[in-house]
Length: 191
Image 1 (cartoon, rainbow, N blue to C red):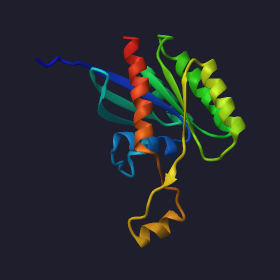
Image 2 (image 1 turned 135 degrees about the horizontal axis):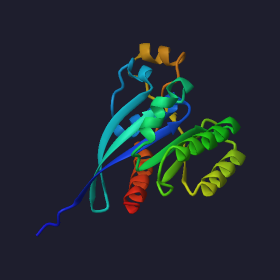
Image 3 (image 1 turned 120 degrees about the vertical axis):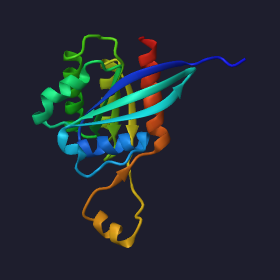
């Protein structure tokens, strides 16, 4: 006799900066193709079905732009969130930005027990910033992860030449999946 699994629909807000790295992080997890023009509207919504423990979960991933122009739109995507992933670059300015995003999120949600995860995108190798990021996560009662992007392999010589002018990065799919499984598990615990 097979046991039926619980089914959930959870919205995860993905906030922070910079937009390009945040988008690549989500693409590595959700495996979607982004049309060239779609980011101009300030929000990207994607879904991904995952299994966590004995639960089937459909995640709604709401990635919002860091640009101030989209602030009011961004706030509407905080509402109803079951969790938040705050992305930031591994720099001193990135740490300040993570604090801003955390405070902005907490200020506009109704429940203080919504889980938060900090994702430090390692574009450098400063160990002091890693320690500060871990300390910040502890202060926020958040989980801390650090991801290091790597260049996408070229599909053709033409693309390889273009890549010299543009930054194309990808993240380890398993690491991204672990981050989303963890925040999903913590969000389900608050239900």
